[in-house]
Length: 132
Image 1 (tube, rainbow, N blue to C red):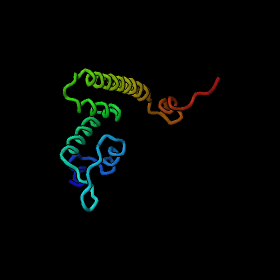
Image 2 (tube, rainbow, N blue to C red):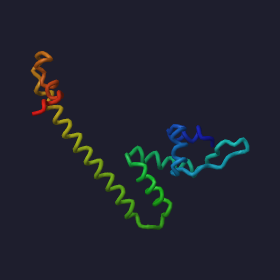
Image 3 (cartoon, helix red, strand yellow):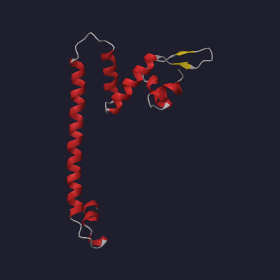
Image 4 (spheres, rainbow, N blue to C red):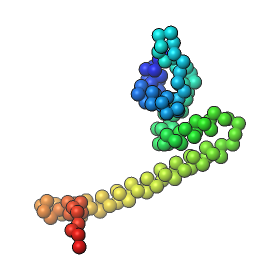
């Protein structure tokens, strides 16, 4: 299949497919007589894996490690578990940060008295503090 077909089949931009080839996540395909890239089912499976991992928020380096591990099906999945648990911890940290952010925004918005902008607690909270 051509690059556009591969991209469409995996909901990936053509530029992203080329980027994944450039950084070594996706092997360069053979070329046909007209010098077009000719992708096979192994490219489709690998790109689908990459897309799913990226959709789950795994960083590219983790995707690279997961791909390397998936190529060796006989080994223990302990390393996969470590990568997944590390990513889960990062997701939880981000959720905690967002929860704190939500609470602070709710507090600031809740302090609004619907007066003038000159009295606005939201603007006051965002304004830089004078140096002592």
